[in-house]
Amino acid sequence: MYWVSLLLGYLWGGIYSLPAMRITKSTDPWLTILLGIGLTITVTTIGLLIFISYLHVIYAILIANALLVIRRLFGKLDHNVERFGLIHAFCIVVSFSYAILFTK
Image (cartoon, rainbow, N blue to C red; front, side):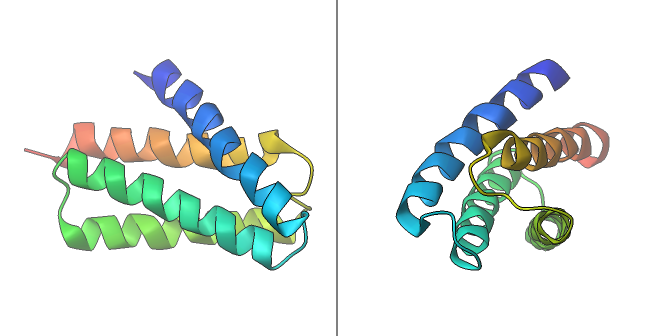
């Protein structure tokens, strides 16, 4: 399950980051905003598909975007898919782990 989550994270991270880099020409803050929107879409979709409560989905969105901003503070995201893919994969693994542990 975790390997699938990591693979999906890197694939979806690439799907979101490559067009976002082209649209914004890798300039911040627009790149970070577009990547945050993509991350929010992924976390919301996973949360709603596995029937996590709305409050927990909101918490997951806030935590995921906080991780993105923290990662951005420690280095640039431009021209490197792996930097966003790692954040995306981590959020997917945590979402699935939460679903396994805390859903009925």
